[in-house]
Structure formats: C-alpha cells, structure tokens
Image 1 (tube, rainbow, N blue to C red):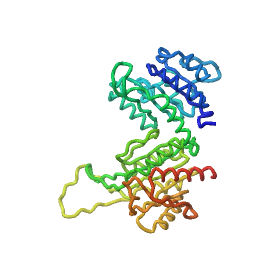
Image 2 (spheres, rainbow, N blue to C red):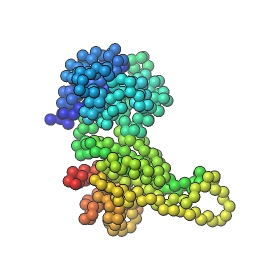
Image 3 (cartoon, rainbow, N blue to C red):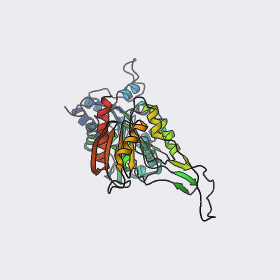
Image 4 (cartoon, one colour):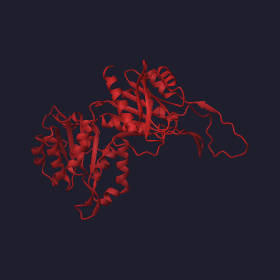
Length: 401
C-alpha cells in the first residue's frame, strides 16, 4: 500500500492550455490510491471538459460555487476540511493574485480561503506574465504565508515565446506529492513554531547590537518539520537565508518583536522549538538621530530583555518545548541547568567554539538533554541531519505524553 493511499488531495485546475497536464496528474494520483477531488474554474472548462476529470478521479467535479448536490453539505467547506493537501495546477496569474489578496468569488478561491491544509501552487503562464513584478510580489506574499510553489519549467510556450512559464510535468508534481507524504508520518497534523536567527537591538538609526547567529539551524528545523507533515511557522530575526518552501514566515527585528510574535502563537502550537539567539540586553534609550562622536569613551546603558523561553516554560500547558544552549565551556552543566530553570522538555547544547559547530557553518555537533540527563550526542554532521534527528526525538516523546 503506497504512501498516497487514502489521502485526500484537492486539485484546483485553472484556465490555460496546460490544464490537459492536470488530467494526467489526476490519473497518476488516483492510480496511486489517492482520493482526488477536482475543482475547475469556469475558464478551465474551456480547455478540458469536466467529464475528463470525473472519469479519471471517479468523483464529481466542482465548477459552480452553487452547484450543491447535497443540501446538507456546503461543498467548498467540505472540500476544504477534508483535504490533506491542496494543489493548484495549473495556477494562473489571476488565481495567484486572488489567493494573495484573500479574494473568494468562485468555487476554487472560496475553498482556498477556508482550508487549513497545506497549499501548493504550480504556476503556468506566459514568460513575461510570470516575470511581472505584481505576479512575483503576490508569489512572495504567499510564500511568506507558507504556500509552496512548484517552479515552472523553461522552454517553448503555447503562446510562441521561449522562456520560463511551462507547467511542471505531471511526473515532477506527482513525485513531490509522494515525497511530501512519504516523510510526513511523524508530525502530520501538528502545528510547529520555530524561532531562528539573531535579534537586532537599536542604538540609533544606523547602529545596533546583535550576535553571530546565521539562522541556519532554525531554518533547517523548519524545513524538516514541513517535510514531516507539520504546519510550520518560523519567527525569524534578520538573516541572509531564502525562505523555506511551505513555511509561514514572521520576520522580526528585536527581542521585543520576537516575544510578541511567539507569545501570540504559543497557544495554537503543539511543538515549540526556540533556536533563535535572542539578545539578553537592549539599549535603555534609542537615540532618534545618529549619535555623534564627541568623546574618547561612551557609556551605553543596557536593560534586560524578556526571557522568551522562560516565559514559554512558565505558561506552557500541553506544548512540547525545545530550547537551545550555545556554550563555550561546561556544556553539559550549563545546558541541564538551563533546561530545568526554563522548564523545557528537551534542550540542545552545542559548543560554538568547536570547529565546524559555529553559527555560520552548515554543520553542527550537539548534545541533547532531558531532565534525566544526556539523551543523545550527535557528532559533527549537517544541520539538516541534526534537525531531522531532533524532530524524530520530539515526535516520539510527544506521542507518549
């Protein structure tokens, strides 16, 4: 029995010549055991008949919002609630714009507004339409909300142009869907809140206090959590990293910003992983204008920032909380003390002075603790591998609590 068996995939088909590829995708998904429910836009019907998708999916195809077969069921809500995954293929510039703006004026767009399932978008359009700043901005907006894009291919387009805009091949989309469900058993249906990066504490408009955190560990955790089927929100300080696909991004600057973003989402999260390196102190007063060099020395008064992890540990109910302890000495002692003081379920200690385990690198070596002591020591390996093992440990313990 394959990983797609019994999974409900709502397939949105928009108007474009690439709609014929959606029929091939429907066939592959159905043959793999998925329950495929197709919604077509009015424009899509001009390219492929609904009967084609009905035959391939073995289900009624929805087009009209008011085409209710059962008066006791509101179809667009029922479809939204039943979906394990929503895929729009092909997605037109119009539908991408609707989704970005929160517009709902047909069966597909209203379902998209109502669903809590992951949403994937596979664009297909003219090369210049795809490159249009408005379309790109809408796509970036959706990425920041956790929508995943399956990039279009390059080549000869139906309009005669050559360039980027071809719908990804059905085999490519199918493989991505299969991979998504293959890795999602551990955190399926869980809401995961991750923090990453350092914070910026302003001194004046051009100067600030920060640290060396790159955000790479937190981003790797967010990416792996999505792969395991979680709905992931990443609260991140400034980094140079690209936004992970399928992750809701909440950008912040200061420790106070991060606290507000985290605490407002704490109660809706089942797993909270605080990998950010939050500044312990901030300037007591932020100068409105650039401070001029007037003396040989300068005294800067700092005040303590709120301890976000400790606040989470104090207020948590059923949440599973993981903290990080970046140390340069007495790692085990400091990490265990921090775990107990801040009421974490697990804490990840790493010696940032160790070669290959610093902030900016792609590798890490960590020691993972619970209240009883060392759980597992992970030798130097990629941060992605560290993230995967940490999430496996968390998922296993969440099932037994």
